[in-house]
Length: 354
Ligand code: NAD
View: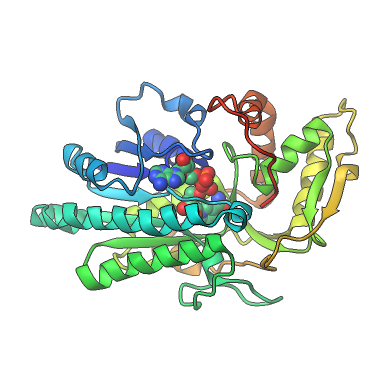
């Protein structure tokens, strides 16, 4: 049985990971989350009361707190999801991205090194620090080619630059200090519990309300989409069998333009809501001024994790999108509580697509 310190476990991917790991492994999870606007305890309602889950509100940069959690719970692996994650917010206010994604990751990593250095030899060998990162660190692709683990870093947004910096710290702590780290770089995720500022949940929410569906530029930007549960299974697999010091790219072989994503969603919504006064939902589409520096295309070559660790996604984009839409339609209260700010007792500003 492992004891995992999961950071950012009240966010989108983290909360999905916590639920999956509790359901499918016997791990004990200490969930450290600062509860920024993106952290939502509603997303952990299904694990409330589970004796293998401990929630702690706090910052990954708080070394005294992290040191105490690592020692008190005898943590033998860390999975670091905690981050500022929204590209548009990083353009409006990059400081928080540097603070958490760079400085916070540094403190977490160095606290992990202290803890690891004092473990008994067997425990030292088994310890893992898994850093969850993004394909955006590789920059933008032309019409062809895909990102591999050796593609040079070329981040273009404050968000991706801050994630790239954190990836370099992780690499250095392995090469310099021998800390057994693992890095995963994943493509765009979608699925339940995603904050409705990101493309897919934002479009579902707006279409449901009959509001305009804002699409950046010509809608031709391409992302490689992966259902969140498939990402979480990949992380569990890397944690279990990944080689320390290695990087694993994770992706779903599902490249779609933003326009294709929105059109597919609108068609699914038309079918799912035959009585909606907003049908056909595609007429709500509205092209808006492009995001500055908007990367044109991302695509992941996931052959390393497929061949080395035997991971592959269970969902196609179409099946995953159907599951996602069904979840949002069944959980309108979750979304309404986020949009009204009731989930944290305050009203949030307007959201923009990612
Ligand atoms: P999210 O914004 O939904 O969640 C981030 C969580 O981290 C929130 O719960 C927030 O409260 C918490 N947090 C923020 N700052 C913190 C701090 N200083 N200390 C402790 N907790 C803090 O993000 P997400 O979409 O779930 O992404 C999780 C991770 O996966 C991020 O590192 C992101 O870069 C990476 N990633 C995301 C995607 C994607 O498509 N969403 C794709 C690839 C990689």
